Length: 338
Image (tube, rainbow, N blue to C red; front, side, top):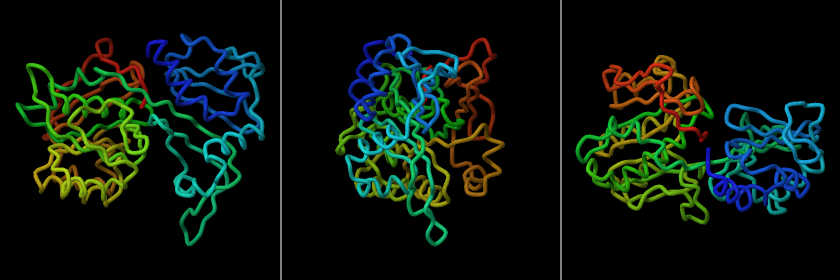
């Protein structure tokens, strides 16, 4: 959980201004201590207002109180969905053209808003989405020290190992990625000197940049290429900023793999995340098979939710030898989504 003061700041400055006044007032009425573990706000046209608090789901009633009873829940109206879209687009849907194509937008602070509706398809590709019917506001957290337990496995003298973080959605991978980047950049007293880090932040989630300036603490030796496609961004950073480590979130396309190979050949180390439940599953994905066959990564961190969001399940080396597998009662948790 985050301190109540931190929750206040995130909600009041970075989340509630993007919601219609009716919904903003309802959520503002909830005691902040109850919202310390807030990870998602779900708005669905004609459906209950739902908050996700860690692994728990709660409805919000018409008086701004949490309840487990859907019959008492406040129902989000079509007008409120339209108002939210109007606020987020700053009254110009044209400004959201790229976001509508991708199905999400990123708010200041790195918070991602996903939306669904009717897809407009042209030439076999999604051109846009119309008749927006639901929003999912995902709260981005930064937890200094979230990576403390894994850092000894990821560094060797003045070098960082090529590392792949494997995690299902909402199990803390971005939170972990951000804190590893921060510690590599700042250094760890008595253990590791800070090195140059480059982040390709395609969805503005790792650094939460606003007008190009990171809003999250990603370290003093870190350069951020914001809102740039991962594959292109990795090559750009290598050519322009001489990073010692490049950080990217959620790889998956074949062009991402090619860029990773290029970075390794250039002598740049990598810190990368991918959606998945384990190494065996990822080996079966055609676009990622080459990464495992050629053993481009030297460390694999598997996250899960067996003991709460962000549980460190296993750590493996480049030979897929298990370095860490704690018994269930002894696993460290990040206690945050990301």
